[in-house]
Length: 129
Image 1 (cartoon, one colour):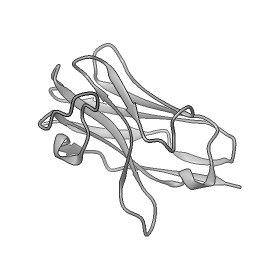
Image 2 (cartoon, one colour):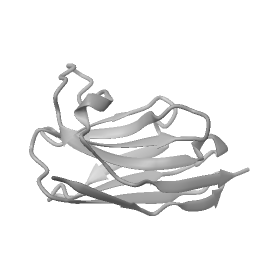
Image 3 (cartoon, rainbow, N blue to C red):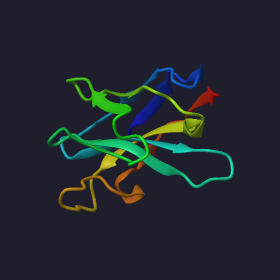
Image 4 (cartoon, rainbow, N blue to C red):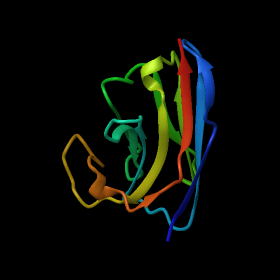
C-alpha cells in the first residue's frame, strides 16, 4: 500500500512560480509510474506531468511544456512539480498519483490512469490575472 501526501499549493499571480511536493510512503518499485494530475471545476481530470521510475523518463502535457518540471528524489519517495510562468488556466486541484506500470506504450510510458493505483488528496493551486 502506498500513501501520497501533497503539499506546496497556494495562490499566486500570473507569471509566478510554485513548487508542489508529494511524499510517498510504502513501496515504490523500479517499474512504477508517478505523476501529477489536475482537475479544474467543471472540467475533466487531466495528466500534467509524469515520470517512469525505471528510466527516469519524464513526460508533459503540451499545455505545460517548457513551464513545468517534474522530478523525484533519489530514493523515489518524493515527487516534485516545479511550476513556473503560471497562468490563470493552471488553476486547479493538483493530485499526485503512483502505481505499477500496466499499460506499456513505447515512447509514452505511464500514459493513462490504469497505471495509477494510488492517489493523494490534492493541493489547490490558484493563479490570478
